[in-house]
Image (tube, rainbow, N blue to C red; front, side, top):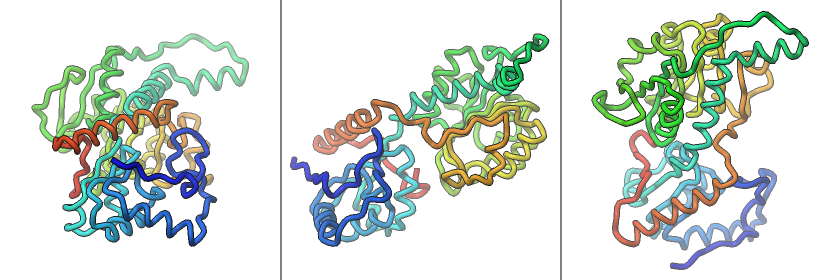
Length: 323
């Protein structure tokens, strides 16, 4: 196996696991020709070229020998879908993602959000800012809370493991409600959400961004939540109807929200979310960890071994729903 790489043709990384690189980087015309020549001579790609669906489309169409592309993100399926590839291209090239690599750090962010909501972090910060020693109050006990996890892929499983260990009663969505998992007390289908969401003290979104999941957390679902529920989103911003979320935060249906993803990123400065004391904003960074690059490469290497041995690859993208 021959490794094709030329660091001079790649944008400089601004930090570890910066797969997109410096947005100000530009190749000369000669460098672009060299870059595309490398792409067009490869059987396998580690990463989507320039993390750009258009560049991926060009490469797949120009390189008939390409057989596998591994995306460095867990949500790489969405980028593949945005490339607008033909059925024949999708049949020829196998796409895999780095799903599961980010499960541990994202589950820790979820735990942070759950703790902030249960222990009323906004109130504590407000009192500290005022230098006010208030009357004591009862906080919520996590081990007595019920959590609903929307999405039970690699991230959802990691979240269930962490929250189950804290003693929470875990409900998760699955395609089949008769599914079983040691960290989940009950599985429900998406169609049953209206019936169970009102029982929940915490809702965690770990859904991928697809046409089927778009704005699934919207007015209808938020009208049925238990007042004061904690909401954490580590899935995709497109899954949430942001105006409906803001309204629920304003009227107290959602008591606290920890958000790592948004409909528009970067989150516009005019968004009311910035001003809300009961919202924790993370700039889509909760998945990042110092060992992320190594974990992505280890997953790629495992899949490369599977490919060479003629075994089925893991994390293969569904080219119908693109997740």
